[in-house]
Image 1 (tube, helix red, strand yellow):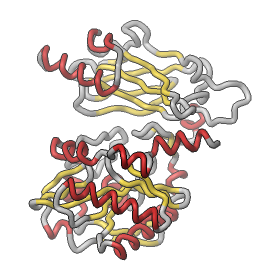
Image 2 (cartoon, rainbow, N blue to C red; image 1 turned 90 degrees about the vertical axis):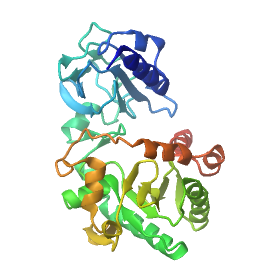
Image 3 (cartoon, rainbow, N blue to C red; image 1 turned 45 degrees about the horizontal axis):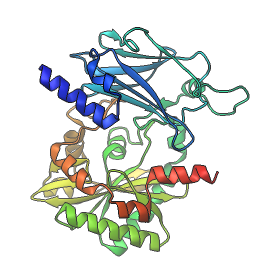
Length: 353
């Protein structure tokens, strides 16, 4: 990367992540920031840094045990640990490593020793990170810890939520509801949900023919879902979150224009009719869910030729077309005020806890 390209990428990362101005003046691979975001009272630990030049993989270690890794083509890296406040044992150490070894903290120290208010206080019953790892939990891409048992216990609930939403769309709009993305990947590759997955991905296939009409229709769908007793709110990328019992499913608006399938702000891909229909039924939790006629075509486009091999560090890389859709699908101020978002709901739940 040339000098101007490197400067631009660091400036862009600084804008996106609200990093201090010192971020882009420091040597590549030698700056971290550890920041506590305590807006919801639970404490989100956010870790920023710059990758050493030429490396693609950066890993986060906790007491020399792997927590997670970033593996994509950006100049910067970012890790998030949600609900970190009071969940880390005293004296614990975090470390960032790359293909070339440890990335020093502030260019000097090889680790960051946990400080208050992250340290767990005596007598606390919160599950700390060390115990979570010992129990088989892993840090998900969204910053939460999940165990395989957590996902397995909720499969019946996910199926019930899916069927309720599917039946509603069929009755109200005549739209099919299909599993997609990580949920589809697990069901096709492993015959089950990915062990540490943290969401249940679905799409509804609209007859709308533009992102603008999809936005208006999404507003109407949210209104009608709420009127019919569903608990739902709008996601930050423009999808709909439906809470059903103890689980939530992500419901992504999708539409087809010029033989291209558009899925919310995540995917724009060419698709033929025989790849899409007739829909296939995939067995799940004693029932079945709908999917593309040829899901392998979608999975190869979305995850690459190596989609059959598990990649715990996978991060989505939306195309320029998908990002343009995402920008238009982001919830408007009036949508947020009327329907709320996940973060607003968590803050409200914390205030009333």
